[in-house]
Length: 254
Image (tube, rainbow, N blue to C red; front, side, top):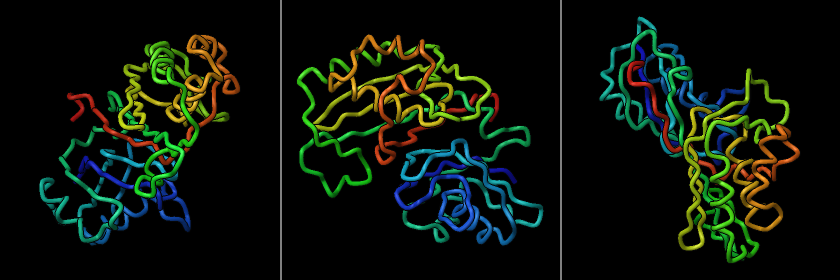
């Protein structure tokens, strides 16, 4: 059977999503839980390979069982697997999908959220869940970041916002949404695109923070895009503030 499952996890104690030898990963942990539940080997594939420390509100995985596995109804899978999963990883829901469904190629768009807490003293309750940014933001920080963000929306070559050395066929992406909001000292960056390059969200956020701090001007986004050079963009924001918020699939693929 093939299940498309929605999972939520706190990435702090995982060494990213993708399975690796001798370290704890989301894919490895979920594969072990599925194998224990079904009593036979299972394959688990993810829609996105999040890095160490990155969280997911609603990531998606494809779980494939073999012919000997019991046919657990999709609507019962979340409760059935719960006893086999650790506190920081949950399977929230699942649906059955066809043999032709592809966990990555059928993605229509993804949404990420990044949280930055701006205060001189760190908050233990949000440690490892937000970027603890202790430096005073200028009064016009939000306005400057919003202006810069507007220049990145659209179809562009985002090579400057990709970690160096990442092997991809092309670096054109459609960034459909890039919002910057602030509430009670927390800046919330929301990004939605048809796909993201490696570290693209974190580099965009880091660059917007450079704009907020007057190290770059909002208009510099045009120059940075045209440069297609990672060295022209700002710093890479730390992973702990990043959340994979949602993954939307083409309706005809489900």
